[in-house]
Image (tube, rainbow, N blue to C red; front, side):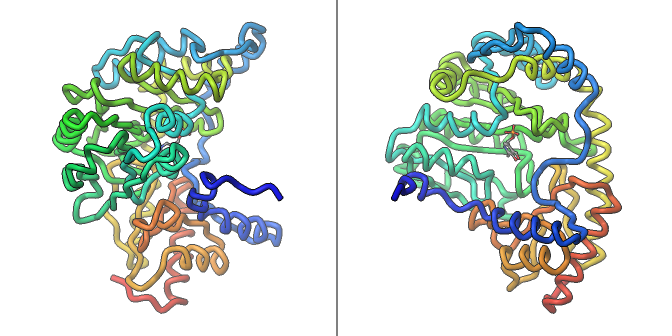
Length: 394
Ligand SMILES: Cc1ncc(COP(=O)(O)O)c(C=O)c1O
């Protein structure tokens, strides 16, 4: 019998799998299911992306292998956007790399820099590609709990110096999925300083930098002096422009670090379809105009969901960034069992906090992927589930 590798077996089971099976069964039975699980909003992609793609597929040159170099036009557009948006300059040829979505880049970076037994710092809860990168690289995953009382920040200096000395890579993500926390610049400065002192590569995952509210503006790690020595930052068109399925992102960093990522990817993929890169370039040239209305629509949804949660006795602070709400459950209610109960009895798919690691126990995540009316309806159903459980609330 062919058996899975020990490496594959070491990965945590994707908790959402069981919920997906139940959801499919319920849909086939005609149940009105509201799915707030994946960060995949129902907005259409920008018309400019669709038009650029339509035109590009007619050009046979676009059908050739892109290789890691890809399309110069995309590199220029991405570097131009980064410069306008964050005031930092990256050479499009040597300091930027197109990715098949940021997820693969995050994971492959671990394979490019970690040796077996190195420590890799992984926020818990955190986006699953981080632990995937650590474990597939045979590294030691150091799960750092994100706690509300520490504003969900990873405080590297709380790790013992011996551990930091063995650490090769740290994953950080703010605005954060799933906790919705944002990171003050002073925190980022402190963190870059630790990484520089211990020679740790900092993978700064920034796919939600455009999904921010009121006057909050999410920074790039490269706004911190000295970050270029130690950081690679990941960006994506997925969330900022509602293009999750297009699989397009990019990494920026110093030429040596970008070359490491490119080298490993040479053995894995042969680049992003150039017609998609063409569409990405069109979108990034108009990023500011395209993102403003999207932000506003996410804000309306956020406010509607926050109001509905308060009404059912689960108050949360309106987050300053991301397309999620991170909701604490009443004490004694387990997040996996609750998500199953809400789906089976109320037809709402939520992410149990534990889908992001054991550190997510006691929470669930709502993605703002449907309109305000449906979100309100979903939250009311969550309230009915809590009533059924007789759970105490605020
Ligand atoms: C924190 C975080 N990083 C990366 C990604 C991956 O995005 P992409 O679609 O660019 O692979 C996601 C998607 O949900 C995410 O939440």
